Length: 113
Image (tube, rainbow, N blue to C red):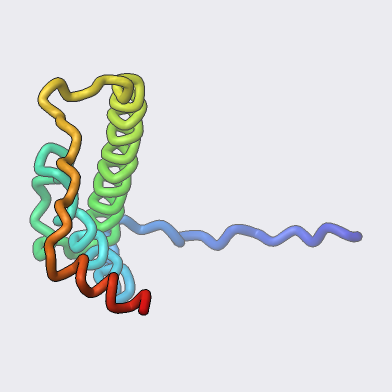
């Protein structure tokens, strides 16, 4: 198969260009996801002040890194917790056996007839 060279367009990346609606919508979705993160992973960026592609790119990068870090920390915590799974609680007790009442015993006798 023949390779067709495609020249890169000039001026594609302009960090000072105003952000379009699609990019601002993506920022809104990431803000929604960021709100579900624990406080220590959240950014301190005010999303309503984002106006350029560069600002949006910076926010997207920070939130994406925070989400990845939160997942890595959770996996490490789960592995650490799984090692301790063999521990038992000393205060646990067996459940007491249920006593039969006269009413339930009479129902069972009635069904056998």
